[in-house]
Image 1: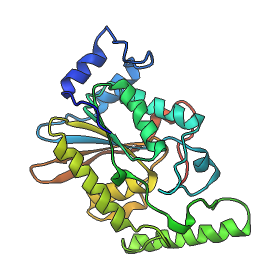
Image 2 (image 1 turned 180 degrees about the horizontal axis):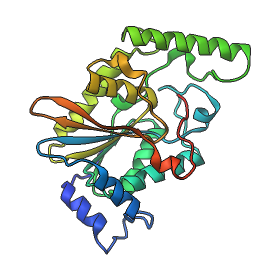
Image 3 (image 1 turned 180 degrees about the vertical axis):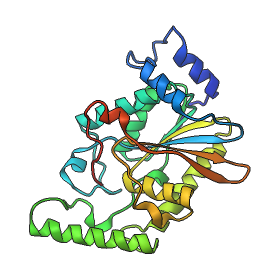
Length: 269
C-alpha cells in the first residue's frame, strides 16, 4: 500500500510546528529525547541517503522461543506494541519521508507506529523485506526443556552455522541467505529509485533478514550476518552514496529507547 508522498522538509516542519493537526495522535509530539537522538547523528551531505532499518516489536512467539519465519504471521504482543511506540518516539524528530515494511503484521504494525509521527510520509509494504523462511522449522518451539526442542535447536544451529560458510545453505523446505539477500536488496533499491526526493527512509523488517541485508550492504558478504545483533525494535542506520554505490555504517542495534525504559529487546526468531 502507498500513501501520497511529500517532501521531507514539509514533514519536519509539521512535526516541529506548535500546532499539531487533528490527524496526528496526541502521543505524536516530538520529545526532547527525540531531538537529542536526531542531533546525535552525523550530518547527511547530498546526495547521500539515510536508511533507518528497524526490527519489529516483540511477539508472544519471540518470547516463548517459537520459530515464526515468513510462514506464521504472529501479531505484536503488549510489550511489542510498547517497544514500537518507543522506537517511533525516538525517530520522531527526524525528517522521515518514506516508511516501508515487510508484509507481515509484526513489522507492518511497528512501521505504522512510526508513521503516526510522520503522517505525510509515503507508506510502502514489500514482501522482499519479509523474514527468512525457516521452512520445516517454522511453528516449532526450539527453546523448551525437552528432547524434541533440543533436537530441533541443534538442527537450526547446524544450518545457521553452515549458512555462515556458504550463503546457499538453507533451512530444509525454506530459504538460504543468498535468496533473502537478493529479494531484500531488490526491494531496497526499488524504494530508493522510486522515491528520489526522500533522503531519510525507515524500513521495518525482521531479525535474520535485517542481519543478512546489513552484512551484504556493509561487508559485501551476506554470510557475515552472525555477529550483527538485532534486538526487538533495534534501530540500525546506514548511509547510501549513489555516486559510488557505497554503504556506510552509522550505528547498529541501537536499543536505548527500550532498554532505558526497562523493556526487553532480545526476542528470538
